[in-house]
Length: 297
Image (tube, rainbow, N blue to C red):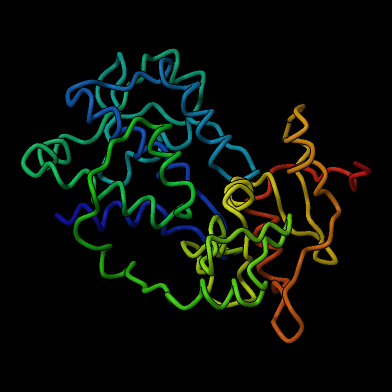
């Protein structure tokens, strides 16, 4: 049984670039718990709030209950559920999962495979991360689910393998003249840019091409906030700031809230700006909630 293929298929039902990280988030959470307690179960009532926080922070804006992946992942051959009545999920009703003492864990076959081959856990986790989230969020997500990963081994499953174009970073940074498109930061040490990154607007994991019109030159801070849905791109290539973002310090106001409504810095004439379909995908699938009014700060 190819467990990497199983992990990759947790998201195959998605269509049209719609994000559905519910099962991958639960699976990553279960792998983190397995690292600490290979025999432990995840009682629904005990992990419900953890799963809600993960879905709120790393899922798309259209919310779902953690009961959905807890029940449905049993169909993927990597997860099993039991209740006070015996084996098998009682359904996706929150009330029923709570009332029946539902508890889940990795399937017996997968637990046995992870014991035989400890490196499999890291390969499965990296498959889930690479196929569902941008690299800027991998470290934070591992910390959130309690996963400690060794340096990567192996490759993605063959049907998920896709090579990134290593030229994209230089092309995007050149197009934006080595300045953050949101704040204009342009730091260097000598001739080497520092703290500047090429961000995918439509995530690479969801078919985003390695093209200039799917890229932004962003400083490290704004890249992270862009991938977390705090920042977005609106009509007229103006910066969106989510109303869900809260920050009272002068730094938060100046570096985030004051960006609302500001036009992007760049790209230079002759370079393609962010394509409308990529902007729309990010607005629908990543940006959190409603934009703030244009800042008067």
